[in-house]
Image (cartoon, rainbow, N blue to C red; front, side):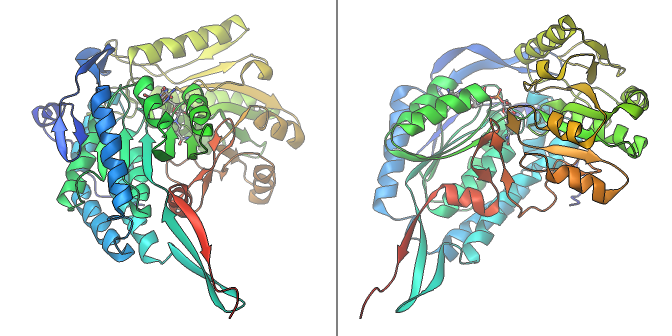
Length: 491
Ligand code: NAD
């Protein structure tokens, strides 16, 4: 998909967006509770503001406002066409906010502007897609019955909670929020404490579209606030994107009263390189897989699984490409690699690299990085046994392993407890497809790495520890719906 090239707004306009608020029943209010951590600019390491959390009283207010709205039935009973009109209007308003959203994320998360301005088109596209689901009639489908049609109604479950991480917060939030609203649910969004600001702009878009107040609310804070929300009995549907620990805690809370749950968690994604692969293309794929979102990408390359006959060629070609990667300030249009999201995260990745070195690993990196800020060059580690490299690192780091046969390649690709993304490179497409079909993962791309899916309407499933349920245009809408089958049984 091609979008117009945009440039970041002036820095003082970007900085003016760093004013945190809770958004409760249509009011913007400052959060009261100081947390221990700081929101920072990872490009320089400078502190922006202390992390803040919403008070328990305001969380309670948000929940009761949402519950009251759900019980009133006002939004649930708004005809799907009218709900779609509001979502389309929100999409139009949010389209104009993409440069601001993208710049805020580049400044606060280090994602380079060329990527953040591209990926944040998802913000408005998500609202268009959700409106499209409503206009397609999906909310009320029909199958034949003994006495006329049987209706399959998709009805809003109730209050929805959406929780997002820091690697692409606004786009992830928009996909969840748009579908919850389309389904007819009042929704409470909790952005991440590390990068809450871009999500605040969703309030501007939805307000401009005329969404009735209270249907979309934002509360701030970290794991504690997230747990409070997902443990509340009034909440009936939860969509969470984040790490494994958070996902497990959310799942445990939702199990208590069987909330509808969608979890999008991590991955340790393999790239299988077959002996006939085009080495130049493989090297480009490795760079894209390791540098997109600065390697902090759920479908980032984690394990390079290379045929032993071309191991050296692949490694050398990747290192040559690493030398050409331009690392720098994320707001600069020249930068291809920005810093990691925060100091603590950089520390975690560096200690993961050191742990691999202690297990015999040798690091290979060649990108020049600025000395200020939380930069880390893309790094391939060789020489570590495959059963020591099963965990997600969530940064620009991949381990390299070799194979002799297709069976070995598939076994290495399927060895981790995750199953989100995967890649196969090979000149013989049939052969590559045959290997790809045996990989137990939500999706496999052949001879290419792209941030967006091959088809936006295809599901985005997650296997194993990568998640629970699937994402997608219809799949996410369904998370917020209860189905009810209604028809005439006798005359
Ligand atoms: P994280 O789990 O620490 O935090 C994510 C969000 O969950 C934050 O808003 C956080 O405050 C909240 N949270 C944390 N613990 C919680 C708990 N116990 N209960 C309720 N809420 C809680 O993750 P992160 O470090 O911000 O993000 C990185 C992770 O996100 C990586 O593992 C990455 O793979 C994953 N991710 C997955 C996808 C996907 O689509 N599968 C996309 C992006 C990121």
